[in-house]
Image (cartoon, rainbow, N blue to C red):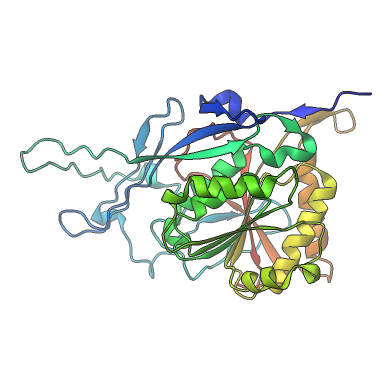
Length: 362
């Protein structure tokens, strides 16, 4: 009998997590993060937007650029773009979302070129006022190695990337109704619950995964918005929307954002995932956007004589096939700009990708 192939998330090799064994094959790990640090006004009453993040090399907090009056522009005068058009057939303009916050939500690649300097703040004694970042931690029970069909029991980089994006855009997700697909052990849903009004955390119920999520949600209940409702329920990509339970369908009618991380690793599952998001785009009346975080995994093939990312490429091809079934692209696939801060301690490698899907007519 051949050995079963075991896979391990690269995340565990690149950062030292404080972990304890549970005795049942799982581990409980503490994932530390830095809270975004925003000030509504400075001492002069000027609006500011200061963001703390992790320094990529040593894990130390770094402070984002604080905008001076000359760098702040009226949101109605300046169109601020969060995403870049995806490099494929999707050459249309990016989505114009009504809830864009012109300072916090936007990707500002030109910030480093601005000549304005951060304001120096002093305390009442005239000493330098150093604002120390507030830190937090999420404790997650998970596996450190699994079979390929059980990778949802592990934590992968995409979940932390998506968590970073939610934290950086907390004003967008505040009081929102969010659905996570393929939630794994629930880390991203727990981060979403810090801001959202309702989070529907879903995955298939295999090897006790849903109970594991429920335990992780309870373990981190103190982090959640006290007004947030958390639901953990099964949603199998291979089950059509028409066959969802009525209770789940009713909850989905309020969903504004769908998020998913690290669900692209098998072609059959990819096809089922694409069919699922297409159904949600068609059936959910309040859905504004779907955010998908993943890592392009390269392999060298003799056929291509090059390193390619087959799972990622297959996802793009299959989505395009479903998108243009009637001769017109109904949805836009957009590459989200990646220069938002890193709040969790992990290696934000260049192969990480954050995609956004929204209706083409918006």
